[in-house]
Amino acid sequence: ILNVEQSPQSLHVQEGDSTNFTCSFPSSNFYALHWYRWETAKSPEALFVMTLNGDEKKKGRISATLNTKEGYSYLYIKGSQPEDSATYLCAFITGGGNKLTFGTGTQLKVEL
Amino acid sequence: GAGVSQSPSNKVTEKGKDVELRCDPISGHTALYWYRQSLGQGLEFLIYFQGNSAPDKSGLPSDRFSAERTGGSVSTLTIQRTQQEDSAVYLCASSLVQDFIQPQHFGDGTRLSIL
View 1 (cartoon, rainbow over the protein chains, first blue to last red):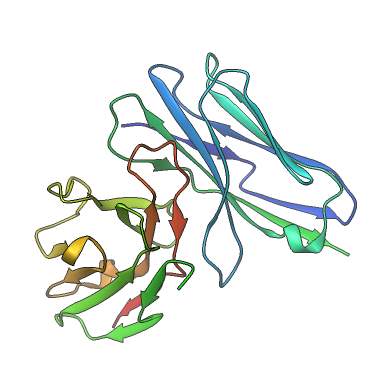
View 2: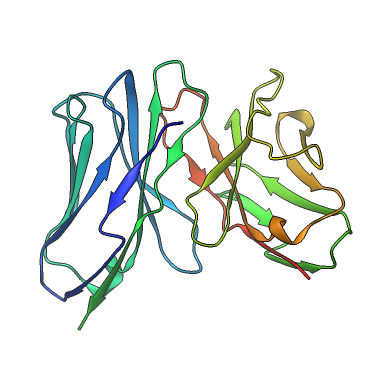
């Protein structure tokens, strides 16, 4: 059984704060790591797909890093805005795997 | 449409009834996935279709669950003799190809409640 763990489970920050959260996954036989943002009453939206150790991806104020040797990925949000409030999901797949295994997410709330 | 479309958006039904959930993927996407999210759980893989290949049904939780994809496009997920533990949000996603390097594009989901 592959376990993907995300921490923290929830996070409240003030507008303008920078924040980050973690996705941990098994380090052996890594293939790909996905990040999604899921806003309430909307569909999950793809942020990044990462495949290489040391990969860094950026989309506006959001960026992610990947360490496949130690089995973690960080998602960073710079200068949080209320519209960043959402649940951030990561999902992992091994080489030869047939499905993405999702974590339970980090629920971010950005307050004015 | 531009995105993945799912219907109905909400479904309330009595225990023991059959339900059918529909997914219309993005045009040109050959891979289609079904997931569900039960309360407090992560997204759970159910089944995927890639082109005309036989679907991977390894995630279906019981033989009451089945899915089909007609003409490589629209898919329906059928749950027979529903149980209360089937209550969840059922999400459909599609991707250009099924290589897990492509991002998956999700619909808004069907919220299923079994009374």
